[in-house]
Amino acid sequence: MTLSHLNPFLAHIHRELGIPSDYEQRTGLQRFDEVSLSNLIVAQLDHAGRPLVLTKSAGEAWVAMRSAADKDGVSLQPFSGFRSYVYQQGLFQAKIAKGSSIDQILKSLAAPGYSEHHTGEAVDITTADCPAGEAVFESTGAHAWLSTNAERYGFKESFPRGNPHNLVYEPWHWKYHST
Ligand SMILES: [Zn+2]
Image (cartoon, rainbow, N blue to C red; front, side, top):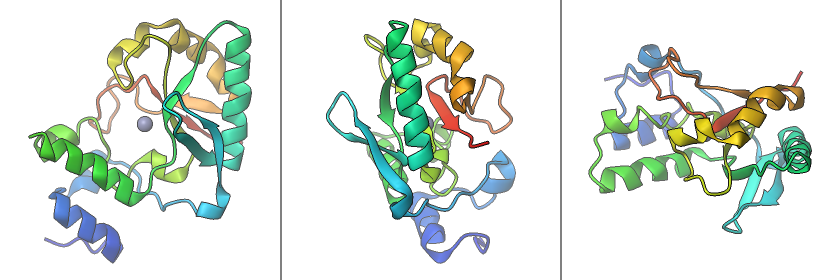
């Protein structure tokens, strides 16, 4: 098994988790470097008091979008922003510890190195009275508001239904695209 397309650190993480060596070809997902820490800011504290960390431009766009939603009576609650390779690895390890297979996990979680969260430009969003990271977010007023307005702030849904990457539909996952 060769993982020569990965840097040694990422190759080590993939080997440790048992990510298939043809993962990149199989999913067509893009590999991302971790954004440099000096580009990151704390955009806000989330409902659990944890910092939402994003790049400066994504963070400013997020704050503007959330304020606009607030004015429309819509509550946008972030629950995940920037994630390092090691943090993503930890998410896998937690699911493996609960008995999930690597194939199951890969349906809802990009392998370390392939998550848009490494760029500091992706935000996972929920709203009041909605469980975080569940498909039911699709039928909330918050999702309807995002579908109409997010693009004005540079945010787009990354993984619509039937996406070519073999990932489940993630109505909660939005990424900032600088123009
Ligand atoms: Zn996400």
